[in-house]
Image 1 (cartoon, rainbow, N blue to C red):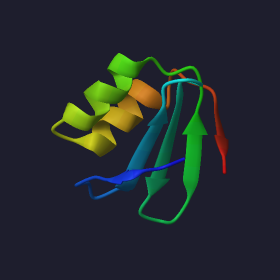
Image 2: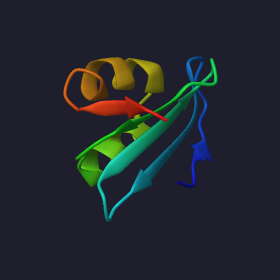
Image 3: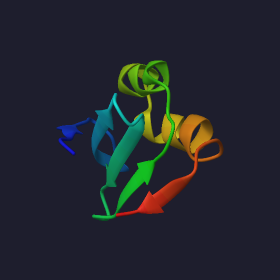
Image 4: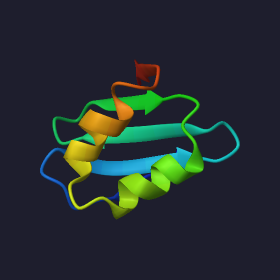
Length: 69
């Protein structure tokens, strides 16, 4: 999945597949996780968030199933 760099202390890059509704997050520690069945507006909210790390911790991690890639 193609990811785009983001300005965050904890997240290096993010990507999203509209067809599978999969969000991929690369963290600064080099780990990569995929979060499943994420609606596109949630991805847009992530990109627009003033704190991407906080958004991931409060709006992504608690709500979506995930797997480390």
